[in-house]
Every structure is written in C-alpha cells, then in structure tokens.
Image (cartoon, rainbow, N blue to C red; front, side, top):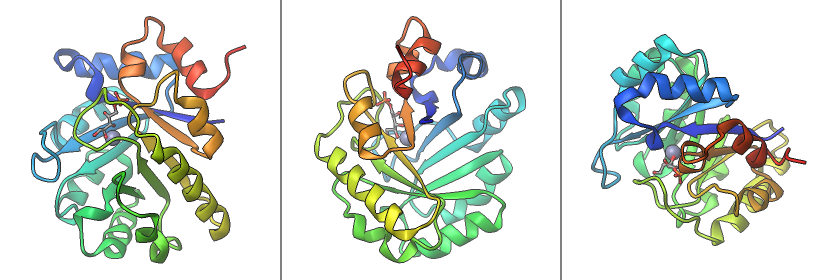
Amino acid sequence: MTKISVSMLASDYSKFGEEALRMQRAGVDFLHMDVMDGCFVPNISFGAGVIKAVHKVCDAPLDVHLMVNDPIRYAQDFAEAGASILTVHAECTPHLQRAVKFIQSLGVKAGVALNPATPLEELKWVMDDIDMILIMTVNPGFGGQKLIPATIEKTAQAAEMIRRSGRDIELEVDGGVALATCAALREAGATMLVAGSALYGAPDAAEMLRILRGENK
Ligand code: DX5
Ligand code: ZN
C-alpha cells in the first residue's frame, strides 16, 4: 500500500502538536518535517527543537527532510529529536556517501533527495547504501506549488533504478501531490507520497488519505 507522509509545513503553526495528532488520527504513515535553512532554499522553517516537541506528543514516525547546507553537521540533532528517516539533498554535501553512512550509524534510515533538475545519476554510486530516494516534484522551499510534469518520468526512472538494484529502497515524491497528480505518481512507482496542502486543505483528511492511496471506491 502506498504510504502517505503529511507535510507539517501546511499546518497551522499556532497548534503544531494538535495538527500532528489530527493527522495521526486520520491515519497518516509518517509526519514529514520540512527543515529549511534560508540558504539552500529561500525560506526558513523550523529546527530540531520543534520536531522534538512534536515527537513527545505524537507517536507517528518522523520523516525529516533536511533542506540545509552541510547536513552532516546537524544530523545528530535530528536523530536525537526522534527522526525515523533523515533525508539529505545530494546538492547539499560533497560527501554524500559519508552523510548516508553517518545517518545510519545514528540508528536512523537515510534518504537522499534530488531537486527537479538534478540527474538520477547522482545516486548511482550510493544505491548500495541508501534506504530511500526522495524525488522533488517541485523546487524545494515552499508548500502549495504545482507539480513539475517532467518529474513523473523521473520518478518512473528512479523506480527502475531501484528495481535493478535488487534492494528494498523506498521511493518518496514531494511537492504538488494532489487529486490530479497522485495516480500518475503511484503508477510511476512512488511508494511514499508527501502531501501538505492536499491533506491540510481537505475537509475530511481520512477521505483524502484514501484518495491519495488510491483506495477510494
Ligand atoms: C517543499 C517541501 C514539501 C512541501 C509539500 O520544499 O519539501 O514537503 O511542503 O507541500 P505541498 O504538498 O503543499 O506541495
Ligand atoms: Zn519536503
């Protein structure tokens, strides 16, 4: 079954914990935490302290998406804050394999994210190491954007790379996941969809979850 990771970026920040619990009750598989440093991406969101506070009140596993330069420097803080999966951008470190291994040494699963224009070839020599690939289907920095169509074919090619590796690697897509795009992403081979505005904007989050998973009717 397709997993759904809800992006907390689209929640009401004045009641962050309650918003996380509401999505947990609706049945999400993960809480997606978008960490932005204002350097790698043109926006600043929240850090390990906020994530740790949510982890105290909410049992849902945390899927932490680091949009920060020099992610190795911060990995331990996010592992200690309760991350189950920690994803770094290939564009953010010259030592990608080291970053992946370091994250795993902290007892956390390691993902690698690629911006829309970054080729899949960046992953070729870490396919033996990674636990997850995150295909950005928008340019990172903001929620509520429209999916870039070329990223659907890119997702399909990533799925093929995973199949050829013979390894059990999660394939996550992030940005613009909505009613109109979720079926194409699932068909392309995505195993985990990130949804922010689609879930927080829905009158019935549980129903939207079923739609995103392709379970309705
Ligand atoms: C973008 C973030 C996404 C974003 C998704 O930089 O990585 O996780 O919040 O939001 P929606 O689902 O609204 O496109
Ligand atoms: Zn994200």
